[in-house]
Image (tube, rainbow, N blue to C red; front, top):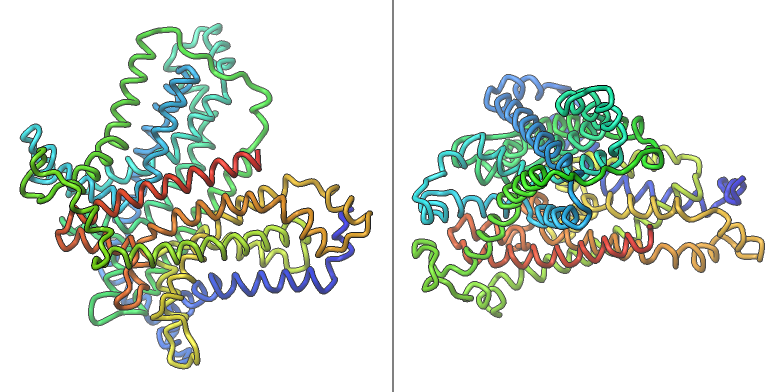
Length: 559
C-alpha cells in the first residue's frame, strides 16, 4: 500500500487536487463550457436560457457552412490516407537500411516538425506560383496545382506524414524478420507476405497515428487559409474565423461550428487513445529486429525514394524560405544580384515593428513555459502520487487540452471573458494570449512529467518517510529535484512552440499587439515577403534549438 493512501483524505492532498481542478477549469473548462452553452442558448450572454438549439437549424441549413464541414472532413481524410501510404512505403524501406543510413533519414524527417504549416504554405507559394522558383528554373507554372484541393493535400501531407512515418518505421523494426522468413519457407511471395502478414500487424499503429493526422488536419487553419482562399476553398476553421472577423460578427454561429469541431476532435482523440491502449504490448521483447537488405537494388531504390520525399518535405521549403528572405525584390527574380541581407538588418533595427513582435512572443513564451511546467508538475504529482478523491475529474480536465482545437479554444475564450457583467477580465489585453497559450501547451508538460513521475518508484518516498520526512519535505527534497530536469525539458519544448502559435494570436491579440506569428502572416499578406521569410527563418532556428534541447534533456532524464 502506498504511503499516500492514508493521506488522501488529509487537507494537503485535497487542497492540491482542488487547486489543480480550479486551475484547469479556469483555463480550459470554462471556455469549452462557454462554447457548449452559447451554441445551445444563443442569448446566454444576457443570462437568458430562451430559445435552446434555435441557432442550430439556421447553421445546418446554410449550404456554405455545410460545404465547409464536408471540405474539412474530405481534406482530413485525404491527408491521412496520403500520409499513411507514404509512411508504409517509407517505413518498410527504412527497415531494409543499415542503422547509420536510417538514422540520417530519421533526423532529416524531423525537420518538417520545425516548419509551422503557415510558413510552409508561404514557402510553397514562392516555389510554385507563376514566376516562382520552379517557373524561373524550368518554365513550368505549377500555380494551378498548388491552388487546388490536390495542392492543399500535398502541402499538408508533406508536413504531417512524419507523424505516421516514425511509428510505422518502429513497427516494422519491432516485427522484425522472423515472420517474413517463416512466410518464405512456406512459399509466400513478397506481395503476399506484405498483404497477409506485415500489414495486419502494423494496422493498429497506422490507425492510431493516422487518427492524430486526421485531427490535426481538421484543426489546421494556416494552410487552408493561405492556399484555399486563392481558389475559394473553405473549411470549418476558416469559416469560424470569418464569423469572428467579418461584419456582422456572428458569435452564436461561431460557437455552433466550434462545438462541432470540438466534438469531431474529441471523438477522434478518444478513439486514438482506445486503439493505442488496446494494442500496446511488449512485443519488442519477443521479436527480432529486421535485417538490412542485402540486395543493392532494393537499397538504391529505397534511398532514391527517401531522397525524393526529403526534397519536397524538407529541402525545397527551406530553400524557398532562405532564398525569399534574401531577395531584395520578388519581381527581381532569384539571382545573385538580387540577394542581400537587408531583411535581416531591418528585422533587428530599433524602429522596426518586428522587434516588438519578437519581444512580445518571447515574453509570452517564457511565461507560458514557466506556468505550464509548474502546473504540469503539480498535476502529475496529484494524479500519480496522491490519487485523491475527485481524481477522475482532474484526469478528464488534464486530457481535455489534447482534444480542443486552437480555433475552438479561441472562440471559447472570447465567449468566456468578453462579457459585460464581469468586473475584471483579461480579454483585450495580452493576458488573454497568455491564458490561450497555457491551455494549448499544457499537454506537453503534463504528458512528460506524468510519464517521468510513473518511473520514480514509491520506495523513494517511503524511504524518506521512514526517516521522518513529512509530505512537503518529501516533495521538496526528493521528487522536486528529480522532476526539475524533465520540467526544464518540457519548458524548452513549450517555449519553442509558443513562439510560433498563429491561431490564438490572430484571433485574440488586442489591437496594436503583434506576435512573431501574426507579424509573419501580416507581412506576407501585405506583400513584404522578404521580411516575413526572414522572421520565419529565425522562428525555425529558435524552434529547432529549443525543441532539440528539450528532447535531449527528456531522453537523458526519463530514459
